[in-house]
Length: 360
Image 1 (tube, rainbow, N blue to C red):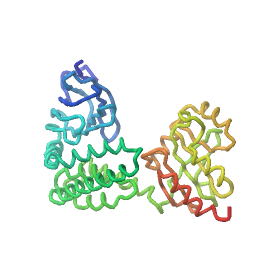
Image 2: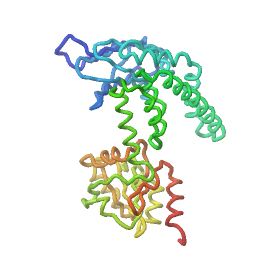
Image 3: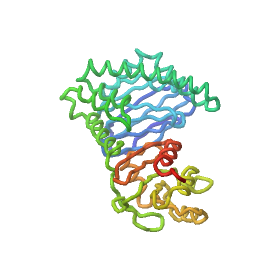
Image 4: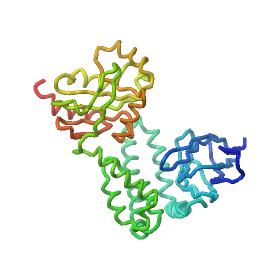
């Protein structure tokens, strides 16, 4: 069926219009996310049988529109300018090679750059798909990961070369944003931003990268842990500032109600071994139904210090600590300094064993 999104119908003027034709599309549903500094607008559309679609947004001030395809496994970001039509075409299996014209001039320059390195971008996409299918074969997966690392390194080198040659172009900011935003290390972002022309310092991507760097430094190793005050599942206040003389483990967990039993297995082991006078565990879960979680933990022998997402508590802490993956852990020392942050369960266990496990 035809897809035409007009979120408001009170005017004939169109602020943003995107026309596209995508080949090799297995799932006709596309998720559309319009975004600016203050929020998002999300909707869906269904492509025609030949992959054609049209998106119209009549109001708002948006910087980007991201299209999510193939059940959100593939995506492409379009840079917008109000009143300028965008045309997009390409193969759904290689979204980084979409041909995008119109809107911001970032689109055309990115398309030209990527097409000049089409073989590398195709190899990257093919390797990612192969890795997803090789999970049961560690040797094959390791070989594929090494190849992917090499391809990514080549693409990053090309991006750095372009940024150094064109510090006065907004596309250089888009390249920094795409390749070098590492939540654990902001050095590359900071070094590359220092090369950018002063004329671009007010650009929204530049400001976004500056903010990103500041947020990442807030939770870098050695930084003072951001303080917070929330209520746990029993209604008791959990105030980071009032915890003294202990290591603190902040464990950001997937929803407990979706699990077969309360808690992640590694959290159960840590709680059983260390949660006493040595370690204060605070588990943050995205569950909104506190009653359901409360019913689950009643059956557990461990006295969990759980913070759910009632009143948006978990979401606020995830934002405060820049959590990008679940599960994820932060280990905080007795001086309230961040000692470790990781998504690796073994790293948490090994570190706690080194700090607290001697003589046990």
